[in-house]
Amino acid sequence: MRASQPFRFGLTPVFLSSDLELLEALQRYLTASMGTDVQLVLKRTYQEITSQLVSGLLDAAWICGYPFVAYRSELELVAVPIWRGTTTYQSYLIVAKGREARGIEDLRGDIHAFSDPDSNSGYLVTRALLAERGIKPQDFFQRTFFTYGHRNVVRAVAAGLAQSGSVDGYVWEVMTQTEPDLTRQTTPAWRSDWMGFPPVATAAVSASNDAIRRFRQALLSMPNDAIGRGVLDLLRLDGFAAAKVSLFDSIASRVALVRTQG
Image (cartoon, rainbow, N blue to C red):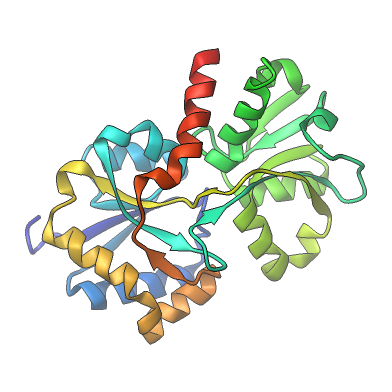
């Protein structure tokens, strides 16, 4: 990468809010920590971000475990967020507050909101849950739609636009602090096992670049810097950690299960 080029870090509002305070602080921290200009690139979907990452239009991106597994041969881990002391999170199936539902079977015939077709917690987990039963979403739910944002899934269920939804448990839990009036209109009917938190990745051909080394170090050092701590506080994260690819084995198993069903 030429010194004159900014370091391009891809983000998607499917996972990360486009909050201006957060984005400005993140850019300011990374630029100072890496000693180079950093450009934050926001796209609407995981597909847009992942395709740009794989093609080299981005230097790194904060993606999801699902596309990381799907493009495993072309991507490398940079770091994984730490939330509540661990590098894992859950997927929730949520319903309106007061509804009696304890699992996927109670959602049969619902209008169901998914987050993104390349989201692990917002699509793949539910898809695999049905695949275990030999069922596809279109044969189980009355109707499904994508909101392209976990917060939008919560909003859809709270407003009655959907009777149930598949959502990132981390996002739902953070929203209980930031938007409690909204989340209290919903409740988790089911929680998945713990899975690898959405990772920061880079193209495999770039993994040994000096810029990626400095970027990784900037993420790992974030708790040691005042601006970095401010970013983490806004994200409700403890920090970032190095991790092994095996952290995403359960997601890989779900991908394989869904693929066998076609």
